[in-house]
Amino acid sequence: MKVFIVYCHPSDDSFTKNMCNAFINGIKDSGNEYIISDLYKMDFKSDMTEQEYLRDAYYRETPEIAKDVLAEQEKINSADAIAFIYPVFWTEAPAKLVGWFDRVWSYGFAYGNKTMKMLEKGIILCSAGNPADRLEKLGLLGSMKKVMFGDRLFNRVKETEFVLFDSTSRENISREANWDLNLKKAYEKGKNLFSDSKKEFSLEDRYFTAISNSDTGEVSDETIFAYHQKGNVIWAEYSGGSVIKGFLLGTIDENNNLRFDYRHINTDGESKSGSCTSEPRFENGKLRFYEKWKWTDGCEGTSVIEEL
Image (cartoon, rainbow, N blue to C red; front, side, top):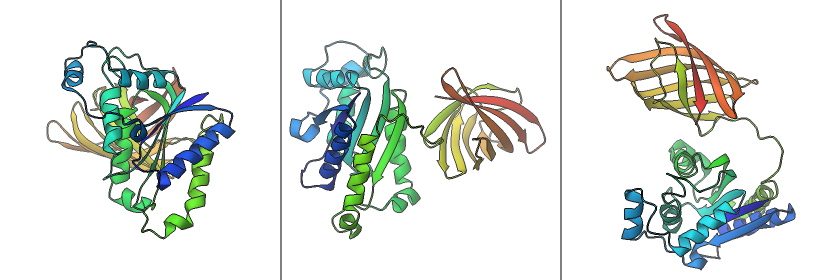
């Protein structure tokens, strides 16, 4: 199998470059293939032209795609997985990689009448100067994941993974102490990228919408749930339709059943709350949760949410 690596770093004198090399060594040692776009070495043009902007803005499939963009799209469709390797700059990927998405994710390829294939996996390996716990507490890590998974890779890959290599700034004493350990982790991610080993079930960064609900319920197919998980704790934000903003918080057991409390504000300005139990089922290739809920006023109902 083959992975397309999109690598973005301005300097070879970096941990990120070493991490990329370790990942590639893992790919090769697993007997799989890779192709790579080193965006800085290629001097990839990251700024959209006015012509490219107008093409996408008016949802047109003409004029023809630029040759450098077409080459990147062909690399994607020749691969089974895609990997993005980059450093975190101000909670984002480098501007050159952002520009790569602006141009390569064009109308008629990544959306609209899509010609982009559904990839088996999308993996992000990024280095960050800050420690992971600081990025988590400030909500920055969640923001990175939401942009990459909730927008750029959404409905374009079957499986996603975000691998953070934290505390890698040169001033951090743990950089050198953890150097070999981090490169080993990058190597293993490459070596096991196409492993058939079953991935541990997690709701982290998974999105759902309601496909059915009792008449007394308030969520609908316009409501989007963004789930998160840490250990056996799950939580989600939800909004859309008659829900302006809602939150739920609870636990997941060993059989992946959920128990949680929820509260939201609806479009009538009412604050509504209740509790819910939720059972997972895989149907038609998608994860669904069959829910039994109860408002705090005693009214009960059922609903089904399905992964997007």
